[in-house]
Length: 361
Image 1: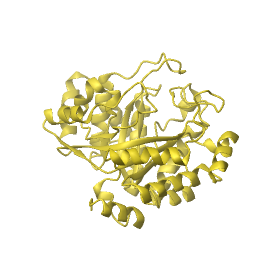
Image 2 (image 1 turned 120 degrees about the vertical axis):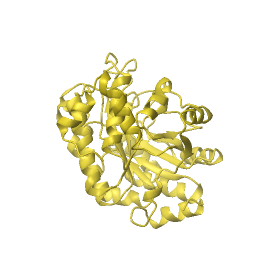
Image 3 (image 1 turned 45 degrees about the vertical axis):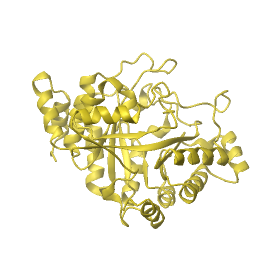
Image 4 (image 1 turned 180 degrees about the vertical axis):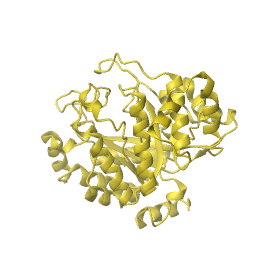
């Protein structure tokens, strides 16, 4: 692992044509020859959210005609049963942050018999473990320690994108209406997950107005957390994609070269962590990111769409396999928790029992 200062990371991220290829080669030597993916189902429990991010097309107001106030238990279970038929192993639960601050969501929760969305999420994860062969992976936004501790019992892993550690972005169109994107709050959640030994996914969103220096600072913030707690299993380097109707619709998305440098530098800084690039956002460039050090495709669903990027369908698994193996890499399915975290130190007894029943230990 490279020991780099913020200025040195910034220099790497500013590499020109003379250094980019050597950067890619060096990153490639830091990774294994296996490229992984998780066959999942995406369960958007609600799209009501207290944040109004400038790049988001997922969020809805409660009065919107296409708002999902709350997915009911029956709908969730029916989707999980279908995912079981497709041999999915990851149930990706996500929802708008602070959704139960809205009276409409609280009413829907009350109808289902719950007082908070965290309690409802716990129930749905528990039902997943009891009634299917899937393992829950939850992305519920910033959380308090007690909620993380509760959800650890029924989750194989959890996640929260740092996006960026810059406070300056809170004053821009990207995050000025998003109190939950306060960097210190997100860092605190990731840190608490580390203290609780929860296998964790985080990452950066590239192209929302951040500077190269802020990208470097953000990577080193994640490295600091990983050095202290060792719980981060994968880092997502996600490129911003402009969409009609969002406040940032005229923002220019990051170039391929920018993304290649981000992926390569991230791998150099994190040889102990898988580096993921969403394949549905990069159909034409997927192989380039493998050459730059990426070694995971993340969740790919044969059943549900990417509700955060609905314009970008998942690639067919056979196509993803072919593109991966063409470069000489092995294409391998994984669980939502990586093998090195499958232990009593990181997982609850209930999760370990489920994994054991799948024959994955």
